[in-house]
Image 1 (cartoon, one colour):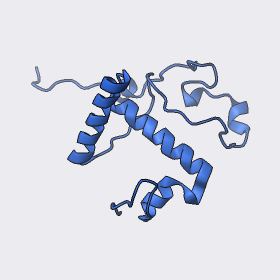
Image 2 (spheres, one colour):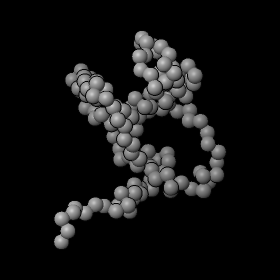
Image 3 (cartoon, helix red, strand yellow):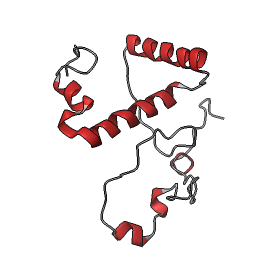
Image 4 (cartoon, helix red, strand yellow):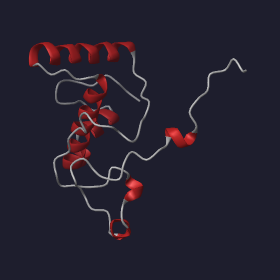
Length: 132
């Protein structure tokens, strides 16, 4: 008997998450889209962008943050819980933040907060000191 722990295989890790969407708009599994959906041209989303909230997600990314950024996020999470009665995890905060920034980018393009911050320009609430 080997002393190594067994790990799940690719088939278990990359299994389909289901064929039906929770709100009926699109299949939860993008591979389950019909050929009619695959043939139509991509259109701009006009509905307001929202964070996906508490649901099973089918994609994952890893984001590295500084200790100060993590501490600020934890402070925000605790303030959301204590002052606003919103018990959310860090993932939900990140998804909402991404949704807000992408909606602003779609609406304002070159004048969006995202473009200005990435360029190193000043932003609405003071100067941005980060540069990349």
